[in-house]
Picture 1 (tube, rainbow, N blue to C red):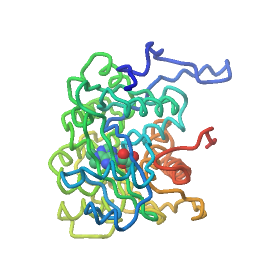
Picture 2 (picture 1 turned 45 degrees about the vertical axis):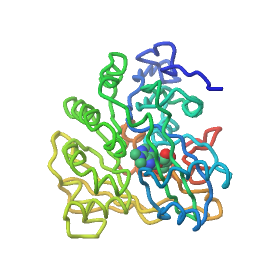
Picture 3 (picture 1 turned 135 degrees about the vertical axis):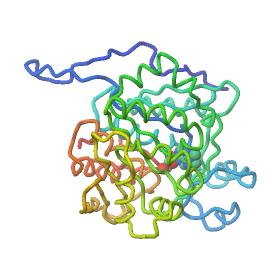
Length: 370
Ligand code: 26A
């Protein structure tokens, strides 16, 4: 009972330009698919869990890891014993849906690898609702990736089996119909989780950005990326125009890179001032800290700024899974629209606040106006 899916969700070639303005006198033409995102499409199998469940699989309350042999039973356990929900996930795919939430129709395209199965069909439905265009590499033999998400209080423990997402490759990126989207894009967003999959694809996007003086945004994604994927991460660093992380990722970066500090502002400064390929743009480092203020350091500037998050009644929080992805989505939408850093941070915080009121990395529909 597998639902057949198309390789691409769009069956017709979208027009390259569309008229955005309501006013005919303005007639402002804006390109389609200005933001291109890359990472690992996953289906989240998410449930509210407990200490016993975390202990059974050796999971930390707040973490993101790759599944090992000992985690094999987790997915079934969540589905059968914890009333798990199937929710579209994959960190950068959540970000891409989030950016599209704030941008005009046909603004965002997302690349990654899936299987030809019912899980991929669920992802297709979710991105369709969000108006996100996807160009998936469809693997005929390997299942769509899954992420077991155990929620305990405001913590989330994620355990990922990448499946078909692990088979994304340069060949797909270089297919003429995909590569033309890459060339057409004006802003690039890469989720750091993709360093576990295909660093050469990341480097292709990074170089494409720098050579055209277009912004390249990287999310650090998880502490283990900073620790165990240091080499490909560092190779991409000169191309980061914006680097986004949370306090845990910042700490892991500092430790693995011998920064000798645990001060988030100092770490942000160090990230902002790493050597840079495209000297036409100053690098901006953004560190989120949950309900604490967002930290922003700009290359060459002494002052590190703080932006308090938008307050929310704790009773309204459903779960915080995907809050960081939503922040990045709102922020990336700001970059696409050429907003100031302050405004882009505001957009990120606004979208994160909406997302934590939903179950999983989701956004409210019908859409709320920014
Ligand atoms: C390679 N890994 C571990 C991953 C992920 C991931 N997305 C891509 N690659 N591990 C967890 N996620 C996603 O993070 C989102 C929350 O920030 C989950 O799918 C979840 O939707």
